Image (cartoon, rainbow, N blue to C red; front, top):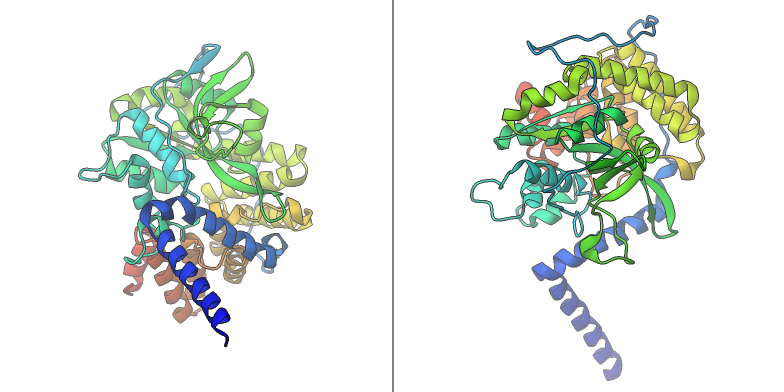
Length: 449
């Protein structure tokens, strides 16, 4: 080897080592890590297109399905409180004041912690005792802890956890703060306006379309929106969007007071069965219940969501029809009508597979687990496993969905595949040490992490 070549190689090696050293400096790593992750993910998906992955049900449900008559949802009160049935007229325009904005930039899939931090800040939460991080990261450290690896910082650990579900957000508030939270399905435009007018901002889970490299294609993803106002004259909601990178406007203004027409808002919200989360002060609970009316009762709310889905399966087409059938399955599952739920999900997946590949919302099972529950409780254990396998095939190599591992473990155990069931369950808890259902199941099965 010539001296010149050797010097070049030494220089290249020195440059690489210096770059690695700089990258690992905390404030530089925080700025660049999410960009590196995005690049790695884009390269992986370029060679492993997730939209090509399909799930085809192969089993019949072991529960007899009986026709369910179409009727107006009946109120079933589960507490001593009797909700008000009629809605109250609201002002033409409301824009809640005192909103503290948190973005999710420099974090991966961090809209759950960012939006919950906004909701908690609004009701007056000042954080966990002795925790110096901002509210966003205090929440994220609990509901999106990621892999149990002390060698990684909390941002790196959180990258392995793909999604935060509404129940995780609600449990965090109820278990760790002096405030209260609830979530319900089957929300409507009128209900959101009623809540905002009464001073209760709404976290809505919705679908969005984002432009992603390497081909700048439009891809569907799930997202949370902290809804803090409406304008009846313009027919628009006003919400805080924790992720709106737009280089045409100053960074400090991005994501604040975004406007969307009611129709646009509903289109995104439909993908999640119109689910919403409310965080509130305990002393305002009766007031909140008066505004929620029939939605106080979870069963009524599920029935309302089912009725909406049933209507939309008859009127929508394309991806919206897929979401409507998926919602119908989710709602039947909430009502423990698992045979009906399984049939609805079968239809949803048939519609999904018939969509053009570029239109398929392949992330849908990252955010929702209704099909697992429906297939498991109709003894379709192999379909649970096949669906979990297909879902994992849409993930970048080190990403994990603890709920997917949990349901696959249950199905494997039902088929007598105990070694793989135990391995899946241990992995679920390893990648989310705060995953309550997994921890409980490990105790039930008598296994250790």
